[in-house]
Each structure stands twice: as C-alpha cells, then as structure tokens.
Image (cartoon, rainbow over the protein chains, first blue to last red):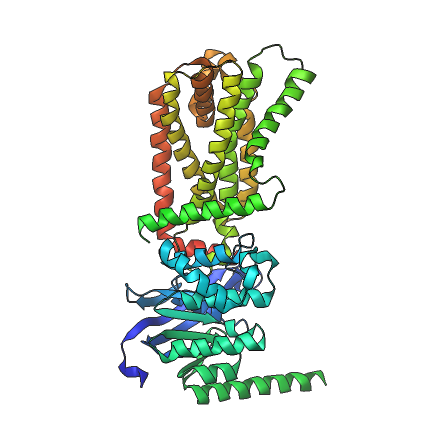
Length: 245
Length: 257
C-alpha cells in the first residue's frame, strides 16, 4: 500500500562504526549498524523493533542527519525536516521547562514568535502546571518525558523520529499521548517509531523492521514481524532460565 | 539554518543561560558587579596592604589587566566544554556545532559589558579622565572579540575530538595569566624582550593596549592590532569551515567518546 507513495528518506547499505577508545575488542571498533537499507515512504508509520543496544537509536540519528554513516548513503529530500524525539537528555537542566520548550522549537526551525505561540499549548497538554517555569533538573522522569513528548508534538516536522518515548509517564498521560500520536499518524505525518515493546509497535505501525546486532533480520507486515520478534525474545528468555537451572 | 535565526538563537541561548545562572545565587545579577569589585579588593589586600607597593597606579594597572583578561579566559574555558556538555541537544537535532561555543561567547559579552562599565567607573573615580583616545577601545574590543571567538570555537572542537584538551586548556590559561603581563608591566622589560613578548603573545599586546588607552591616553599600534585581528580572523574561518564540514563527525565524538 505505502509502496506507491513517494520515498521521503532512503538509506542505502548504511553501516556505522566508531572507535570507542581503549583496545577492548576488534581494536576498539564498535560496529553499530551493518548494511542497513530502508526506504521510508511519505505518511507511513514505520516501526523499528529490537532489544536494547542493537542500534535503534543510532539508526534514528543517522535518519535525522545527526550522524553520518561510515559506509553507504542517506538520501533525504532537501526541503524536508526530520527531528528526533527522545527521552531524558536533550534538555538543559538549569533552564525552566518553558525555556527548554522555546529553545527546542527554535532549534527545529520555528521563529521566535511561532515558538512563543506554542508555549501555552505545550504547558496545557503536558499538564506541568506551575512546574513549567521551574528548572528541568527538578523534574521527575515522567515530567521530563511529558515535556519532551509535548514539545515535539506541537512543533511541526516532516519526519518525526520517535525513540521509546511512549514507554514512560503515568497511564493517564500515556493514553493521552498515544491518542494524540495516533491523530498525527492517521494524518499526513511520516513517522518512524522505535520501541522494544512489541504490542505498541504492532498497534501503531503499518510496516515493521526488526533489528538485531545492527542488521535487519525481518521486514514487512506489522503483525508478522512483531510476533516473530516476540517468539524470539520468549525463546531467548526461556533458554536463559534453563541455563541458570 | 538562516543567519538571522542563527544569531537570534545564540542570543536567546546566552540570555537563558545568564538567567538560569543568576537564579542559582541569592545575590543574582549583583555578582556581575560584585565579582570585579572583589578582585580589586583582593589586589588591594595583597599588593598594597601586605606587599606595600608604593606606586599609586599599580592597583588600577592590575584591575585593568585582570578584568580584561577574564573576558578571554572565562569565555574560552567555558566554550571549550560547550559541545561535549551540550550532547543532549547534539544527539537530538542536527544543528550547526558553532552554535554552542558562540552562545557561550555571547554570554561572556553580556557579562563583560557590566565588568567593563565597573572598571570604567573605578578608573574615573580614581582620577583618570575619559578622552577622545578612548575611541580606540572600539577597534581594540572588536579585535579582542575576534580573538575570543576564534579560540572559543577551536577549543570547543579540540575538546570534542579528545577530552584531554580540556586539561591543556586550563593549564594554558594559567600560563597566559602569568605571561601576558597582568601582574607585571611589559614596558618595564628591556626593549628587545618587550618586543618579543608583545609579538609572540597577542594577549600581552591587547592588555597593554587597554592600559595605554585608558590609563595613559596613548593610542595603540594600529598595524599590530589589525595584524592580530587578521590572523585570528583567518584562524576563525578555518575552524568554522572544519566545523561545518565535519559537523556529524563532531556529533559522533561528542556522543561516543
């Protein structure tokens, strides 16, 4: 279905490795991504699933143009903007939630006027109340994720890259965030959604890619890929338990 | 990123940081004035009360040198850590990496404005007069600014490439503090040595020029000043080109090393 739409972002045999310093193994080289090829089509929601540390976040950073691949090519239409939505970091802890939101909006290309006009909506949706004017370092993890999610939701980008962001926050906010996300997804928004939680990915995405040790293991229909992934995780944990016994 | 947006972001980042900084202290913005005054107080205790310096000018000589040197040293030291310290943002959005040191430099400009006014008031209330020669402060400060920007961007890059540079930079600042003629007068050296110090160390030349203008109503050697400006301007161009072309490499270094 999505194959008929124009390609927004194209990854062609992308590999990424770097020197981690030290001479631990392979002369200190880390191979994070190996020959990954992905086409992202306009207004689709692509899921990327895999366990922690398999290169999901790095893949998103390559898509956002934050990191350059060591090998291979990344092609994106020049007038399109992509932004990465992550948890935790990304804030300046000494600044208030308001200042951080303003800064994030402006860094993503909004003018100061536009950015200021987003602030009230961000404050309302994030339900931060008076804490919105307090330094982010005093926030709980849940409050930070609410601020991060809302800021990204309110500022408009062509390709939204979401990294595990819906896995925290309380149940009430998570429901609200999911609903808002689904509103964006059913619209024209192109989204890449990364998670290690199979049920979320299956619910949100049309197409899913399963990543293991920096390589694509499976790609295709959301239901098929997520169930194959769930089985593999279950097998691995069963093996681990038997090994212990 | 359009230039106007870039400049506005630098300004906003600088002002937000100043506000956050001020809110951490009970005395807030008062520290901008208090800190330079305390420096002069320390100099008074050490050099006048304890060491019994007889020269009446010496206190003003120290204050001018130290307070103008602090502009450079604080800006460059803080900027050196700016990209690595901003890795939360670096890992989130592909922004020009010069944004980080430039915001720190802009913060320094605002702070230094307050320090400079304080210094001016101290000088004027000690019998020095403001004359037309003080107009030479304009080109002098512009060149000083270019030197700071070039060194700040270079330092931020170097620390990004290898954290070890942070150690060298703080040691380098200490070295400059003692070799730039802050506690001693380059003009008391024999002429050959004086020429060497001024030629080799641009900071010594700049600090001497501030004193010549504000304390002795003498214009600085404009050719020497412009040479410093051109040299550091060229250095700045090279560093900025590097940072633009290797933006993603710098991001990788900031995120992984």
